[in-house]
Amino acid sequence: MFLADFQRLPPVARGSVADGLAAAIDTVAQGAAPTHAFLRYGWYAAALAAYGGHARTVLVEEDGEPTLALPLVGVGPALLRLAAVPGCYWPFRSFPLARRAGEATIRAALSTLAGAVNGLRIGPVYDDDAAAMPLIAAARASGWAVLDRFVADSWLLDMAALQAEGSWPRGSTLRKNRFHEKHLAAHGAPDWRFLAGTDWPAAFDALAAVEQASWIAARTDGSDAKFTATGHGAFWRAAAADPVIAGMLRAALLTIDGSPAAFSFDLDAGNLKYAIANSYDPAYAKHSPGKLLYYRNLVEALGRGIARVDWGAGDSGYKQVIGAERGPAIRDWLLLRPGLPALAGRLARGVWRRSGH
Image (cartoon, rainbow, N blue to C red):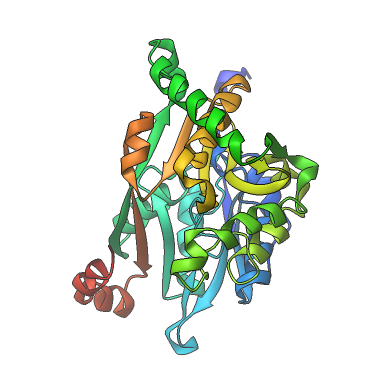
């Protein structure tokens, strides 16, 4: 017989639910889109340690190889059997899906989910999310109720394209920055540093010091600060315990006479930089330390091969000045399995949608 006489069988995908976080999460993340490579075991373990919850993992194998890992934590009354994807809101909440995964993986994931929960919340995620969108599309086609609520628009900066056009960064901007840097030195000796890898988790203390001096501490209860003990500091310190994740975390730090004055914190995924947080001490506000730092940060990243920056949501003014353009919308999704859950979901669609921003 000739090779052409053999018929290739369709891939066989099998789903299961593991109690706790499955070690195979890392295997799937390694084969996922670069944008999702940080969604590792350590990422979800950090979320559980910081925010609580007991995890299960929907794991799908296609021809014996892990292709999807979907961690779940219960939400609401246990009787309702509702779950959510755990994690951190920055840059988004999703799960790893191997690039080699086919339709069989998605079908097996949905079938396994239907036996494990009545409903699943995924999000916030982007409208082009490499893992969530295939699952959402398949759920809709399979009779699940699919509810979405708008959270915000994202903003994207294509540095490589703008530089190729010769329009970024503008010479006028660099001249203004040099002017402000000169006057900033009147406060003390400025030092510009770039943090990565083994700098974590110790370097989070410097970022927290900036937040504690910033407007977020003066005008709010501080719970939304990224790196303080009263904010989300426990998450980031735990996530950085995974050396792969730590290798993706980057920050630019400005100190004045050795004291932290401003920072810009990011997560690099392939040639994409997620701009997660930036802040500055208002004592230096007159000289725009935040602006000076993030321009230095972006130029340094461009030199390392970072082509695009995902600025996420919020405060579009300064992002547009930099050159960012509106990107995919960010939404929260609720998937309710066929039957009574789906019927209830369709009746509550308006309530869910109005609860967004």
